[in-house]
Length: 178
Image (cartoon, rainbow, N blue to C red; front, side, top):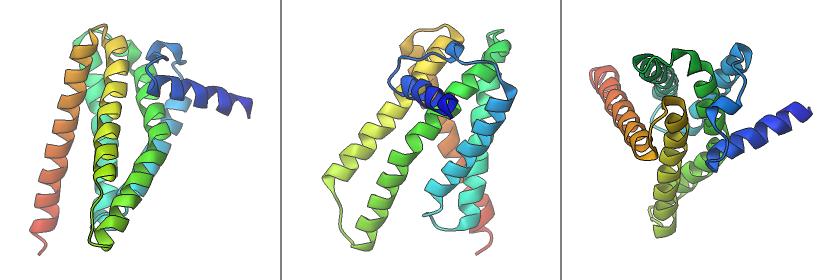
């Protein structure tokens, strides 16, 4: 059980930009466990959206894109051997960051149902989004051996690719059904 505490602290270390992906073991088992957990937790966050099917597809798509883009980036730099450690860092940090994301999602849902808004909720969402970008940038900076600015640019590009793909999927799958 102490191993979970060690891992939790290491993943928190990624979230506060201290732990690097190379600090993790290249464990396929850990990678696959984290990928499953990340996908399920992401599904939990997205379940409060329009439909369960859309949440499931979005969650699977986000996990697949994270893996594919990370492997592609590392492969393009000739650093494919770092993929498992990099994905462990990204997925582990994602797992750690899910509870606050879920809390914010529930807060927004409550505000929407009450037909009101909160400047504090908006500010926290923006801060959380930027923090998440910096966490991803931190991991990519170390994995790709680039400056933080480059890692941040790649993280922002990833978000744009993800959003574009999810919107396209939504339009293709759910607009034609109505």
